[in-house]
Image 1 (cartoon, rainbow, N blue to C red):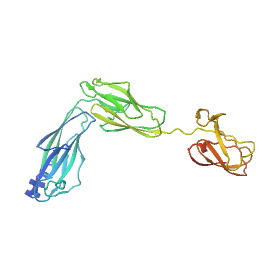
Image 2: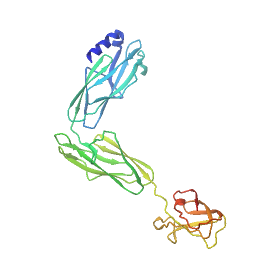
Image 3: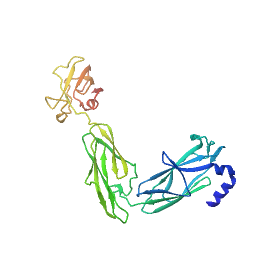
Image 4: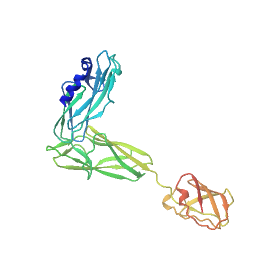
Length: 324
């Protein structure tokens, strides 16, 4: 690696080597990156992201030719396409480019990596600190900070529970100071409340309930100390109830309105007493235009069948259906 860097440096003009500067940028302030940079600490499964800014400080164009990163626990999370031409410095963004390095420890330990930006070399250090690990019950795959936890589709009014485990793979006890669930349709945590002390090797379980009130998509948040996870779920509207179509002894005239009744004198708004049979006296082929509470008989033709089910005609709030 060092030999390749020396060869690359020999091929670049001296002016190009001096033009590029490397900074650490926090979104507001920038700090020159030294030979050694500590990116901070994170628990297993968490990620700390450091943003770097490369600037061309010279009066001629410069090229960012190479970006490399070697070391466990560190990865690029956003990089420009290379080679990248940087304009002469004028104080505008055209003379700068940014990239991100993510530190994601997998255990409690010290980590280091070697970052090379053209011929600028920086040693990155990071520390994996003890922290509670969040997983679904029965899974050994931890959720990273910001992960999406999907509850799937649930009928409105029904409830789906997911069970989660907080574990501690380190050799010392860790404390969860905050554990909250927010968002319409989501309730919890059930079975645990902060502060929670998790001993080495211990597992603390809790549940989150998703109970949609309508057939709409829902989103919430599970907050675990400084980490947060996105909760999602889809509510499903209940199907329309069945109903009985009752005609008079003689077939009604074209355009007559047939009201739907469920279980005798109960209107369609009482779905618990809905029946599913459709009775049309006589030998007729009927074509209906229907809504939630009534069916209008529009057309009658001769046919051989007189009894058919009405379920299919009532599964959508509006539309058309043929009953044969």
